[in-house]
Image (cartoon, rainbow, N blue to C red; front, top):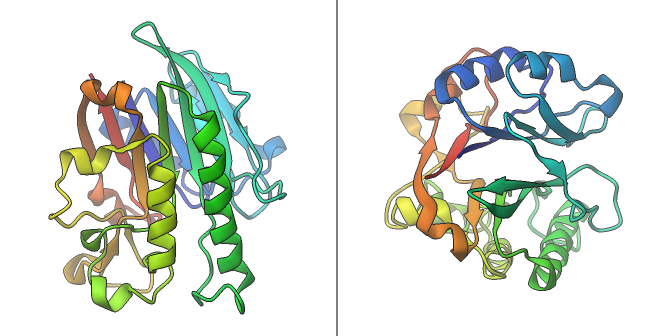
Length: 263
């Protein structure tokens, strides 16, 4: 079972890149974030033509949006929710069968939080903190036994998830209050699959800013995208892959796809 997560930063704009990614990685399931397409305009026929007949999506114009594309049967899960009282298309969940086990797959796009890491002056940062608190409280009581959670969580929690721990401590995505909040969410019953494979002592990034034209040379990245699994699935964990080369494709997203492989 090969599951890809990718903040595609506009599905319709980057459909050609999605086709290239499928040829490169041959995933069974694709979870996309920031699709930026309202549901009536979702390119369903184009996706089906790529070999993914099972599709669930939640979208809105210009912002946010999540979808899950699959080669195999999936069903929209009743656990799909809106958060913080906003219908802003940041979460979708599906149920499917894996080796006779019922599995729930969550796809999240967590609020970025703006530029100022002060909830008193920045409503976007307050929204992000509220979001983390709400999902953490909910998962404590509602986590299914066999669960996978992927997505752009917009937080790089560990020291080596950023290019400079000291310089980014006051930068949104790596502030202590955010990393503490994400860790609390992880501890509701998940294992960080990426760090099961790549030790936390090694640098690991999934995002490089558009502002840095020489991004590959300077390598000032952050690990904002995540793959989590419940302990019941850890014995099946085979590999993770970060497709860094996609960042060099024509008109790329600032995030790169990440792959979870369960044997």
